[in-house]
Length: 283
Image (tube, rainbow, N blue to C red; front, side, top):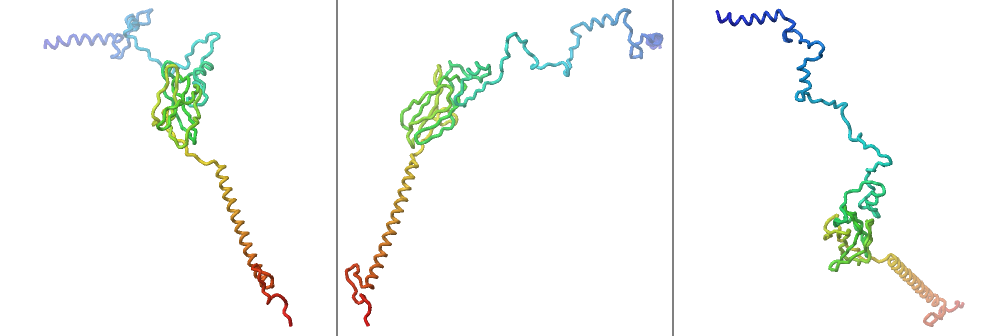
């Protein structure tokens, strides 16, 4: 009994304080927070907490309004300066008589594709379709991604030595190789060169490599010879037909004339006349 009275005394005292002081009750009992001192809008300890860098919340940016685009950023324009052109150059690796991209860049300020410098040996060009005739071949190639000063043509017949062909400047993409023999196989190669050296070649087995194995066409008769032969044959046929016609006509006339001579009593081809039929019958 003594223990219960000792325990209930503090509880009874706390309950009386809560009933007598409702303005100081915490919010869990339905009261409001205590007001700060007069002349201050915040409690001093709350202001110190807000200014602390450890307790300051990380600012959240509004993605709907707080953003920027890299396209909007611009460098301040200097007096007398011009905006550089960032358009790619009108340069094609396979176009015939194509100026060097460095020249186009100097003229228009365009952007060139990446190429190696003149101190590096060029990569091999890509040889395209090769058209052949009886004694010539037409070649077309594409430039490599390298600095090229000139193109060199090389060809070799089966079992023969290598022949150095003509040299073309860096703008060329087409060439005609003449002086070939009919019905002959050749290995034709195109090489790029600069101050560092010459591009490598291969055996012609690659589809888009620098070399190609070709074979010239067989010799063919010119059309004039063919026409002349047909005309001569037609003339012989006409002459033979006319000869046969006149010979047959002469033979028929000769046979008909002999029969008339016999009936009329005239001298025939054999010089003999039939006297019984020579004149009119006498009564």
